[in-house]
Length: 138
Image 1 (cartoon, helix red, strand yellow):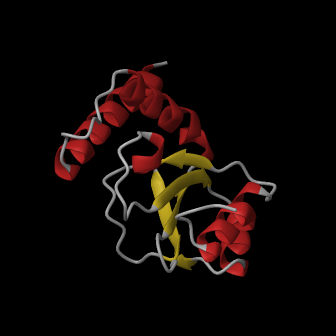
Image 2 (spheres, helix red, strand yellow; image 1 turned 90 degrees about the vertical axis):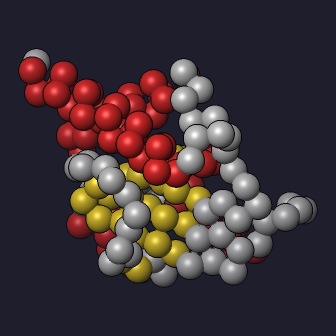
Image 3 (cartoon, one colour; image 1 turned 90 degrees about the horizontal axis):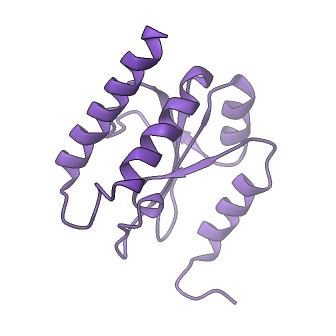
């Protein structure tokens, strides 16, 4: 038995887990800054197969995502009773960059509980820009 987790939410997470695609945890759950209403955020390499999989499993295109990340192609969301599940579709060329950005931010404990959402977005954008510029120079 799991406490404090809705059955619908759990089913959606199992669907992602049991798929043939590699979904990376991100957002507040990755950075360990959750609150009682935290949603679930993932990213995955963009492909027609991923889009078909998400749509088949009840995800809908989020027409107004709140992300300032140039690597995101689209965001799909699955509305839950408790917490939504968001999946960011990323160009496959940028998956490694996004993983590196997450590691840098996480390992330096930059997103502690005191950093507001706007500042987190600016930091994320800065780290991604630096990594992207470095990657393009190679």
